[in-house]
Image (cartoon, rainbow, N blue to C red; front, side):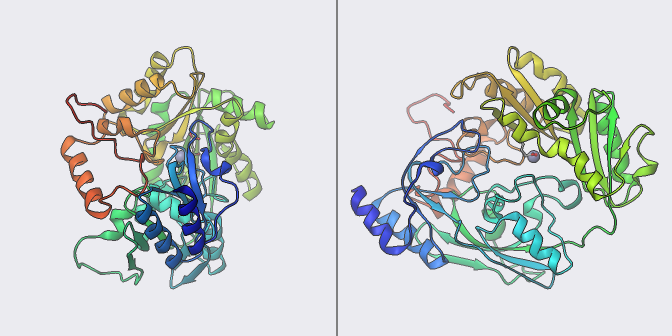
Length: 435
Ligand code: 2HG
Ligand code: ZN
Protein backbone atom coordinates (compact mmCIF):
# COMPACT_ATOMS: atom_id res chain seq x y z
CA UNK A 1 0.00 0.00 0.00
CA UNK A 2 2.63 2.52 0.94
CA UNK A 3 4.58 1.94 -2.30
CA UNK A 4 1.35 2.56 -4.25
CA UNK A 5 0.65 5.63 -2.15
CA UNK A 6 4.12 7.03 -2.62
CA UNK A 7 3.96 6.50 -6.38
CA UNK A 8 0.53 8.13 -6.56
CA UNK A 9 1.75 11.14 -4.55
CA UNK A 10 4.90 11.45 -6.66
CA UNK A 11 2.76 11.55 -9.79
CA UNK A 12 0.98 14.70 -8.58
CA UNK A 13 3.74 16.71 -6.86
CA UNK A 14 7.32 16.78 -5.61
CA UNK A 15 8.12 14.90 -2.42
CA UNK A 16 10.95 15.35 0.07
CA UNK A 17 13.60 12.60 0.02
CA UNK A 18 13.97 12.56 3.80
CA UNK A 19 11.09 12.90 6.27
CA UNK A 20 13.17 12.97 9.47
CA UNK A 21 13.03 16.70 10.18
CA UNK A 22 9.24 16.73 9.68
CA UNK A 23 8.71 14.00 12.27
CA UNK A 24 9.67 15.98 15.36
CA UNK A 25 8.38 19.25 16.79
CA UNK A 26 10.48 22.33 17.51
CA UNK A 27 10.80 21.52 21.21
CA UNK A 28 11.80 17.86 20.44
CA UNK A 29 9.12 16.74 22.90
CA UNK A 30 6.83 15.05 20.35
CA UNK A 31 7.82 12.71 17.54
CA UNK A 32 5.69 11.02 14.91
CA UNK A 33 6.00 9.21 11.61
CA UNK A 34 5.32 10.39 8.07
CA UNK A 35 4.16 8.14 5.23
CA UNK A 36 5.59 10.71 2.81
CA UNK A 37 6.31 14.43 2.68
CA UNK A 38 4.55 16.28 -0.16
CA UNK A 39 5.78 19.63 -1.41
CA UNK A 40 2.96 20.99 -3.58
CA UNK A 41 3.77 24.19 -5.49
CA UNK A 42 0.21 25.23 -6.37
CA UNK A 43 -3.36 25.03 -5.12
CA UNK A 44 -4.08 22.47 -7.84
CA UNK A 45 -1.27 20.27 -6.51
CA UNK A 46 -2.61 20.58 -2.95
CA UNK A 47 -6.00 19.46 -4.22
CA UNK A 48 -4.42 16.51 -6.05
CA UNK A 49 -2.53 15.43 -2.90
CA UNK A 50 -5.76 15.47 -0.86
CA UNK A 51 -7.54 13.44 -3.51
CA UNK A 52 -4.77 10.81 -3.53
CA UNK A 53 -4.86 10.67 0.28
CA UNK A 54 -8.64 10.26 0.27
CA UNK A 55 -8.41 7.44 -2.29
CA UNK A 56 -5.88 5.63 -0.12
CA UNK A 57 -7.71 6.42 3.10
CA UNK A 58 -4.69 8.03 4.75
CA UNK A 59 -4.60 11.19 6.86
CA UNK A 60 -2.80 14.41 5.96
CA UNK A 61 -0.91 16.62 8.42
CA UNK A 62 -0.22 20.16 7.23
CA UNK A 63 3.19 21.65 8.05
CA UNK A 64 4.21 25.30 7.73
CA UNK A 65 7.35 26.75 9.31
CA UNK A 66 7.27 24.04 12.00
CA UNK A 67 7.89 26.54 14.79
CA UNK A 68 4.63 25.57 16.50
CA UNK A 69 4.82 24.57 20.15
CA UNK A 70 1.93 22.09 20.47
CA UNK A 71 3.07 19.52 17.88
CA UNK A 72 0.19 20.35 15.52
CA UNK A 73 2.40 19.75 12.48
CA UNK A 74 3.90 16.46 13.67
CA UNK A 75 2.51 13.59 11.55
CA UNK A 76 0.81 10.60 13.14
CA UNK A 77 1.34 7.87 10.52
CA UNK A 78 0.03 10.44 8.02
CA UNK A 79 1.21 12.18 4.87
CA UNK A 80 2.87 15.52 5.59
CA UNK A 81 1.72 18.30 3.26
CA UNK A 82 4.31 21.04 3.60
CA UNK A 83 3.38 24.52 2.38
CA UNK A 84 7.04 25.52 1.95
CA UNK A 85 6.76 25.95 -1.84
CA UNK A 86 3.51 27.95 -1.72
CA UNK A 87 5.35 31.24 -1.45
CA UNK A 88 5.11 34.77 -2.84
CA UNK A 89 3.48 37.96 -1.62
CA UNK A 90 1.88 40.96 -3.33
CA UNK A 91 0.85 44.19 -1.62
CA UNK A 92 -1.96 46.35 -3.03
CA UNK A 93 -4.23 48.96 -1.42
CA UNK A 94 -3.13 48.26 2.14
CA UNK A 95 -3.60 44.51 1.81
CA UNK A 96 -1.14 41.67 1.34
CA UNK A 97 -1.96 38.52 -0.60
CA UNK A 98 0.50 35.77 0.29
CA UNK A 99 1.02 32.10 -0.41
CA UNK A 100 0.50 30.06 2.75
CA UNK A 101 4.18 29.16 2.96
CA UNK A 102 5.41 32.75 2.89
CA UNK A 103 7.26 33.60 6.09
CA UNK A 104 5.98 36.29 8.39
CA UNK A 105 9.23 38.22 7.85
CA UNK A 106 8.64 38.25 4.07
CA UNK A 107 5.10 39.57 4.53
CA UNK A 108 6.45 42.26 6.88
CA UNK A 109 9.17 43.18 4.37
CA UNK A 110 6.75 43.39 1.44
CA UNK A 111 4.41 45.57 3.54
CA UNK A 112 7.26 47.89 4.57
CA UNK A 113 8.41 48.33 0.96
CA UNK A 114 4.99 49.87 0.21
CA UNK A 115 4.97 52.05 3.34
CA UNK A 116 2.75 49.70 5.37
CA UNK A 117 3.27 47.34 8.30
CA UNK A 118 1.81 43.96 9.19
CA UNK A 119 0.07 43.87 12.59
CA UNK A 120 1.49 40.51 13.70
CA UNK A 121 5.08 39.93 14.80
CA UNK A 122 6.86 37.21 16.77
CA UNK A 123 10.39 35.99 17.46
CA UNK A 124 9.98 33.09 14.99
CA UNK A 125 9.21 35.52 12.13
CA UNK A 126 11.94 34.16 9.82
CA UNK A 127 10.51 30.62 9.86
CA UNK A 128 6.86 30.89 10.88
CA UNK A 129 4.58 31.01 7.84
CA UNK A 130 1.52 33.15 7.25
CA UNK A 131 -0.51 29.96 6.69
CA UNK A 132 0.63 28.53 10.01
CA UNK A 133 -0.27 31.72 11.83
CA UNK A 134 -3.76 31.57 10.29
CA UNK A 135 -4.14 27.89 11.21
CA UNK A 136 -3.33 28.63 14.86
CA UNK A 137 -4.74 32.16 15.10
CA UNK A 138 -1.27 33.15 16.27
CA UNK A 139 -0.86 36.15 18.55
CA UNK A 140 2.68 37.33 19.14
CA UNK A 141 4.15 40.59 20.34
CA UNK A 142 1.69 43.22 19.06
CA UNK A 143 -1.71 41.87 20.05
CA UNK A 144 -2.35 44.79 22.45
CA UNK A 145 -2.03 47.05 19.44
CA UNK A 146 -3.55 45.12 16.56
CA UNK A 147 -5.24 41.95 17.84
CA UNK A 148 -4.42 38.36 16.93
CA UNK A 149 -4.07 36.96 13.40
CA UNK A 150 -7.85 36.63 13.20
CA UNK A 151 -8.18 40.42 13.25
CA UNK A 152 -5.87 40.76 10.23
CA UNK A 153 -7.34 38.06 7.99
CA UNK A 154 -9.62 39.34 5.23
CA UNK A 155 -9.71 36.22 3.10
CA UNK A 156 -8.27 32.82 2.37
CA UNK A 157 -8.10 30.30 -0.41
CA UNK A 158 -8.25 26.75 0.94
CA UNK A 159 -8.63 23.18 -0.23
CA UNK A 160 -11.23 21.05 1.54
CA UNK A 161 -10.80 17.38 2.39
CA UNK A 162 -12.51 16.24 -0.83
CA UNK A 163 -10.11 18.35 -2.92
CA UNK A 164 -12.59 21.14 -3.67
CA UNK A 165 -11.27 24.69 -3.51
CA UNK A 166 -12.93 27.55 -1.64
CA UNK A 167 -11.62 30.98 -2.47
CA UNK A 168 -12.62 34.13 -0.60
CA UNK A 169 -9.97 36.60 -1.68
CA UNK A 170 -12.00 39.57 -2.92
CA UNK A 171 -11.20 41.56 0.25
CA UNK A 172 -14.48 43.51 0.15
CA UNK A 173 -14.93 45.59 3.29
CA UNK A 174 -18.58 44.59 3.46
CA UNK A 175 -19.79 41.08 2.70
CA UNK A 176 -22.73 39.88 4.78
CA UNK A 177 -23.56 36.80 2.74
CA UNK A 178 -23.84 34.02 5.28
CA UNK A 179 -21.49 31.73 7.15
CA UNK A 180 -18.00 33.16 7.46
CA UNK A 181 -15.89 30.31 6.08
CA UNK A 182 -12.73 32.41 6.25
CA UNK A 183 -12.93 33.02 9.99
CA UNK A 184 -14.02 29.42 10.57
CA UNK A 185 -10.68 28.29 9.15
CA UNK A 186 -8.69 30.71 11.34
CA UNK A 187 -7.59 28.66 14.34
CA UNK A 188 -8.78 25.35 12.86
CA UNK A 189 -5.21 23.96 12.96
CA UNK A 190 -5.32 22.11 9.65
CA UNK A 191 -8.31 20.01 10.66
CA UNK A 192 -10.91 21.53 8.31
CA UNK A 193 -8.99 22.53 5.19
CA UNK A 194 -5.52 23.27 3.85
CA UNK A 195 -5.06 27.03 3.56
CA UNK A 196 -3.16 27.83 0.36
CA UNK A 197 -3.39 31.65 0.13
CA UNK A 198 -4.08 34.35 2.69
CA UNK A 199 -5.27 37.94 2.28
CA UNK A 200 -4.44 40.16 5.27
CA UNK A 201 -5.07 43.78 6.13
CA UNK A 202 -2.00 45.96 6.70
CA UNK A 203 -1.67 48.73 9.27
CA UNK A 204 -0.05 52.15 9.25
CA UNK A 205 3.54 51.89 10.48
CA UNK A 206 4.16 53.55 13.86
CA UNK A 207 4.98 57.25 13.50
CA UNK A 208 7.56 57.00 16.25
CA UNK A 209 8.70 54.37 18.69
CA UNK A 210 9.39 54.37 22.40
CA UNK A 211 10.72 51.22 24.03
CA UNK A 212 11.15 51.01 27.80
CA UNK A 213 12.00 48.31 30.29
CA UNK A 214 10.45 48.95 33.69
CA UNK A 215 11.60 47.21 36.89
CA UNK A 216 8.63 46.47 39.15
CA UNK A 217 8.00 44.76 42.47
CA UNK A 218 5.15 42.47 41.42
CA UNK A 219 3.01 41.13 38.57
CA UNK A 220 0.09 43.13 40.02
CA UNK A 221 2.12 46.34 39.66
CA UNK A 222 2.87 45.40 36.07
CA UNK A 223 -0.81 44.77 35.31
CA UNK A 224 -1.68 48.20 36.75
CA UNK A 225 1.04 49.89 34.70
CA UNK A 226 -0.18 48.25 31.48
CA UNK A 227 -3.69 49.45 32.22
CA UNK A 228 -2.41 52.99 32.64
CA UNK A 229 -0.23 52.82 29.52
CA UNK A 230 -3.27 51.67 27.52
CA UNK A 231 -5.16 54.78 28.54
CA UNK A 232 -2.42 57.38 28.59
CA UNK A 233 0.19 56.45 25.99
CA UNK A 234 -0.45 56.64 22.24
CA UNK A 235 -0.20 53.54 20.08
CA UNK A 236 0.73 51.00 22.74
CA UNK A 237 1.73 47.87 20.85
CA UNK A 238 3.68 45.67 23.27
CA UNK A 239 3.45 44.93 27.00
CA UNK A 240 5.72 41.99 27.78
CA UNK A 241 6.46 40.41 31.14
CA UNK A 242 9.77 38.99 32.32
CA UNK A 243 10.59 37.58 35.75
CA UNK A 244 13.98 37.77 37.45
CA UNK A 245 14.85 34.10 36.81
CA UNK A 246 14.17 34.53 33.08
CA UNK A 247 16.35 37.62 32.87
CA UNK A 248 19.15 35.68 34.62
CA UNK A 249 18.72 32.81 32.16
CA UNK A 250 19.02 34.89 28.97
CA UNK A 251 21.96 36.69 30.54
CA UNK A 252 23.72 33.40 31.27
CA UNK A 253 22.94 31.74 27.97
CA UNK A 254 23.34 34.74 25.68
CA UNK A 255 25.84 36.84 27.59
CA UNK A 256 23.57 39.91 27.73
CA UNK A 257 24.59 42.63 30.22
CA UNK A 258 23.01 42.50 33.69
CA UNK A 259 19.89 44.54 34.51
CA UNK A 260 19.31 46.22 37.86
CA UNK A 261 17.84 43.37 39.95
CA UNK A 262 14.05 43.34 40.18
CA UNK A 263 11.40 40.62 40.64
CA UNK A 264 9.54 41.74 37.52
CA UNK A 265 10.51 43.57 34.32
CA UNK A 266 7.86 45.01 32.03
CA UNK A 267 8.79 45.84 28.45
CA UNK A 268 6.52 48.47 26.93
CA UNK A 269 6.50 49.80 23.42
CA UNK A 270 4.33 52.66 22.18
CA UNK A 271 4.39 55.51 19.70
CA UNK A 272 4.49 58.26 22.30
CA UNK A 273 3.55 59.28 25.82
CA UNK A 274 5.31 56.52 27.76
CA UNK A 275 7.59 59.04 29.48
CA UNK A 276 4.59 60.28 31.50
CA UNK A 277 3.56 56.76 32.47
CA UNK A 278 6.69 54.92 33.55
CA UNK A 279 8.68 55.45 36.79
CA UNK A 280 12.07 57.20 36.76
CA UNK A 281 14.07 54.01 37.11
CA UNK A 282 12.78 52.61 33.77
CA UNK A 283 15.40 51.94 31.11
CA UNK A 284 14.47 54.01 28.06
CA UNK A 285 15.86 53.01 24.67
CA UNK A 286 17.64 55.90 23.00
CA UNK A 287 17.44 54.58 19.45
CA UNK A 288 16.52 51.49 17.42
CA UNK A 289 19.75 49.67 18.31
CA UNK A 290 19.10 50.31 21.96
CA UNK A 291 15.49 49.12 21.60
CA UNK A 292 16.71 45.87 20.03
CA UNK A 293 19.05 45.49 23.01
CA UNK A 294 16.09 45.70 25.40
CA UNK A 295 13.97 43.38 23.26
CA UNK A 296 16.76 40.78 23.31
CA UNK A 297 15.95 39.87 26.93
CA UNK A 298 12.42 38.97 25.86
CA UNK A 299 12.94 37.58 22.36
CA UNK A 300 15.73 35.18 23.28
CA UNK A 301 13.77 33.52 26.06
CA UNK A 302 12.42 30.62 24.01
CA UNK A 303 15.83 29.72 22.58
CA UNK A 304 17.51 30.05 25.97
CA UNK A 305 14.97 27.73 27.62
CA UNK A 306 15.35 25.26 24.75
CA UNK A 307 19.04 24.98 25.53
CA UNK A 308 18.26 23.81 29.08
CA UNK A 309 16.39 20.72 27.87
CA UNK A 310 13.04 19.70 26.45
CA UNK A 311 10.48 22.10 27.93
CA UNK A 312 6.83 21.42 28.61
CA UNK A 313 5.21 24.45 26.93
CA UNK A 314 2.07 25.58 28.69
CA UNK A 315 0.63 28.62 26.96
CA UNK A 316 -2.32 29.93 28.97
CA UNK A 317 -4.31 33.11 29.34
CA UNK A 318 -5.94 34.47 32.47
CA UNK A 319 -8.22 37.30 33.47
CA UNK A 320 -6.03 40.36 34.18
CA UNK A 321 -6.93 40.37 37.89
CA UNK A 322 -5.82 36.74 38.38
CA UNK A 323 -2.39 36.95 36.70
CA UNK A 324 -0.42 37.68 39.88
CA UNK A 325 -2.25 35.02 41.84
CA UNK A 326 -1.58 32.46 39.09
CA UNK A 327 2.15 33.22 39.02
CA UNK A 328 2.29 32.98 42.83
CA UNK A 329 0.47 29.63 42.81
CA UNK A 330 2.68 28.02 40.14
CA UNK A 331 5.43 26.76 42.50
CA UNK A 332 2.83 24.69 44.35
CA UNK A 333 2.05 22.70 41.18
CA UNK A 334 5.55 22.61 39.67
CA UNK A 335 7.54 21.58 42.76
CA UNK A 336 10.88 19.97 41.91
CA UNK A 337 10.88 21.38 38.36
CA UNK A 338 12.66 24.34 36.79
CA UNK A 339 9.92 26.75 35.73
CA UNK A 340 10.18 29.88 33.62
CA UNK A 341 7.23 32.19 33.14
CA UNK A 342 7.06 35.11 30.74
CA UNK A 343 4.67 36.40 28.16
CA UNK A 344 2.29 38.96 26.80
CA UNK A 345 1.00 40.68 29.91
CA UNK A 346 -1.19 43.04 27.94
CA UNK A 347 -3.12 40.02 26.64
CA UNK A 348 -3.20 38.20 29.98
CA UNK A 349 -1.14 35.54 28.20
CA UNK A 350 1.60 33.71 30.09
CA UNK A 351 4.05 31.17 28.70
CA UNK A 352 4.77 28.65 31.43
CA UNK A 353 7.82 26.58 30.53
CA UNK A 354 8.55 23.61 32.76
CA UNK A 355 11.77 21.60 32.64
CA UNK A 356 12.48 18.42 34.50
CA UNK A 357 9.66 15.93 33.87
CA UNK A 358 10.23 13.39 31.09
CA UNK A 359 8.66 14.36 27.74
CA UNK A 360 5.84 11.83 28.10
CA UNK A 361 5.12 12.60 31.76
CA UNK A 362 2.23 15.06 31.56
CA UNK A 363 1.32 15.37 35.24
CA UNK A 364 2.77 18.86 35.47
CA UNK A 365 0.95 19.86 32.26
CA UNK A 366 -2.26 18.67 33.83
CA UNK A 367 -1.69 20.58 37.07
CA UNK A 368 -0.75 23.88 35.39
CA UNK A 369 -3.59 23.76 32.86
CA UNK A 370 -6.13 22.89 35.56
CA UNK A 371 -4.86 25.77 37.67
CA UNK A 372 -5.34 28.20 34.76
CA UNK A 373 -8.80 26.85 33.98
CA UNK A 374 -9.85 27.01 37.64
CA UNK A 375 -8.96 30.71 37.65
CA UNK A 376 -11.14 31.41 34.63
CA UNK A 377 -8.33 31.16 32.10
CA UNK A 378 -7.82 29.38 28.77
CA UNK A 379 -5.64 26.27 28.29
CA UNK A 380 -4.60 27.46 24.82
CA UNK A 381 -3.99 31.17 24.40
CA UNK A 382 -2.03 31.65 21.20
CA UNK A 383 -0.20 28.42 20.39
CA UNK A 384 -3.32 26.34 19.77
CA UNK A 385 -4.17 22.86 20.98
CA UNK A 386 -2.33 20.69 18.46
CA UNK A 387 -1.50 17.17 19.53
CA UNK A 388 -0.02 18.23 22.86
CA UNK A 389 -3.08 19.67 24.56
CA UNK A 390 -6.20 18.03 23.20
CA UNK A 391 -6.85 16.01 26.32
CA UNK A 392 -7.36 19.32 28.15
CA UNK A 393 -9.54 21.03 25.56
CA UNK A 394 -12.62 20.20 27.65
CA UNK A 395 -11.30 22.50 30.39
CA UNK A 396 -11.86 25.49 28.11
CA UNK A 397 -14.79 24.26 25.98
CA UNK A 398 -18.20 23.08 27.16
CA UNK A 399 -19.69 19.73 26.03
CA UNK A 400 -22.13 21.66 23.82
CA UNK A 401 -19.28 23.57 22.20
CA UNK A 402 -17.26 20.39 21.65
CA UNK A 403 -20.30 18.75 20.06
CA UNK A 404 -20.74 21.72 17.72
CA UNK A 405 -17.04 21.61 16.82
CA UNK A 406 -17.32 17.89 16.05
CA UNK A 407 -20.37 18.53 13.88
CA UNK A 408 -18.43 21.10 11.84
CA UNK A 409 -15.51 18.70 11.53
CA UNK A 410 -17.82 15.87 10.47
CA UNK A 411 -19.50 18.05 7.85
CA UNK A 412 -16.30 19.30 6.22
CA UNK A 413 -14.09 16.24 6.69
CA UNK A 414 -16.37 13.22 7.17
CA UNK A 415 -13.55 10.67 6.87
CA UNK A 416 -11.27 12.48 9.32
CA UNK A 417 -8.45 12.86 6.79
CA UNK A 418 -7.20 16.29 7.86
CA UNK A 419 -4.99 16.56 10.94
CA UNK A 420 -5.84 13.27 12.66
CA UNK A 421 -4.86 13.48 16.32
CA UNK A 422 -4.89 17.28 16.28
CA UNK A 423 -7.22 19.60 18.23
CA UNK A 424 -10.35 17.50 18.85
CA UNK A 425 -10.06 14.77 21.49
CA UNK A 426 -10.95 11.24 20.39
CA UNK A 427 -14.51 10.28 21.16
CA UNK A 428 -14.38 7.72 23.94
CA UNK A 429 -17.08 5.12 23.47
CA UNK A 430 -18.19 2.60 26.05
CA UNK A 431 -18.80 4.79 29.06
CA UNK A 432 -16.83 7.21 31.17
CA UNK A 433 -16.31 10.85 30.36
CA UNK A 434 -12.81 10.07 29.02
CA UNK A 435 -10.58 12.86 27.80
C1 2HG B 1 6.76 33.89 22.54
O1 2HG B 1 5.93 34.66 23.01
C2 2HG B 1 6.28 32.62 21.92
O2 2HG B 1 7.96 34.15 22.51
C3 2HG B 1 6.98 31.38 22.50
O3 2HG B 1 4.90 32.52 22.01
C4 2HG B 1 6.65 31.15 23.93
O4 2HG B 1 8.54 29.70 24.23
C5 2HG B 1 7.42 29.99 24.62
O5 2HG B 1 6.88 29.40 25.54
ZN1 ZN C 1 3.98 34.24 22.83
